[in-house]
Image 1 (spheres, helix red, strand yellow):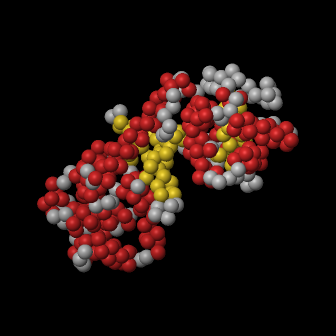
Image 2 (cartoon, rainbow, N blue to C red):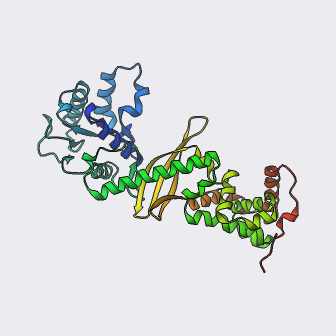
Image 3 (cartoon, rainbow, N blue to C red):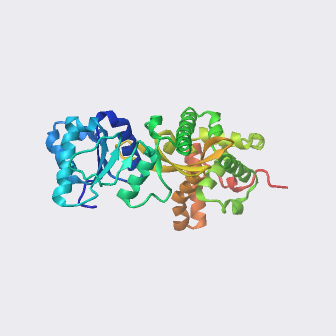
Length: 362
């Protein structure tokens, strides 16, 4: 694989761009390095496209995914791409380089009629995408097939009701993510409407620790959870803390930026893997100030007919990130670090009294 820039290159006519766009996004979401012209328009500026495309389809890719249609036989760039791909297949004497997908009854000269193909007149585009991933990558990702959230497909290419439901779930997950994202940016208490019950309950448990746990009990919490707990204890008056319910505690965390604000609010959901009927994992891409991208995985659960973001995984990752502190420092030094961090966040020196329970359990 190291000798090729791309695992696969898509060759298609403009009339099939919607299909090509979906397949390109699906392949990319499942770890396949794919050449799709819209992904690299910037790299073609000022270059000779005839030479560039000929090189890609003849030398730079392991497979050529060819969307065969009547329009594909007529258009100039598909003709160029097809000739380069056929030259590669014939000169290398290697079957299987061209992976044909038939959109209608057209076929191309030079490709044996016995070549196995995917027929979109009878097979779903999702099935076609899964077959391509298996063929090119050798297997599906461990989580299963990731479906892109955009573009939405024309109904003609997703005929099966089960697959229509999969797509509806994907779009529902994107909608939930966007609503939660907007709530984070506006610090709205409605953010709690778009997360799982387990997420809200976790913040409620931390509030109870803030009220009831002594230093020894707090030491059983992981670093990031302990930091949230101590912030609750320091920043909220006792009576207000006693009256807060789980949802209000979670909403406080939203206002304080303690609820995956960077990972979610600055991110864009790209693909979703449906693990089962009630569980999914979404890939969220975000760019930093230097233009580098990072991918985070977020878990979604289906509760009461709605897909909701479950942030327990994100909290675990935060605890793992800060967990290195526990491995390096002695307990006393770790406690000192917590006090210093709290003091910086609060703007004043937090005393040792913070380790004392506010309202010990009776």
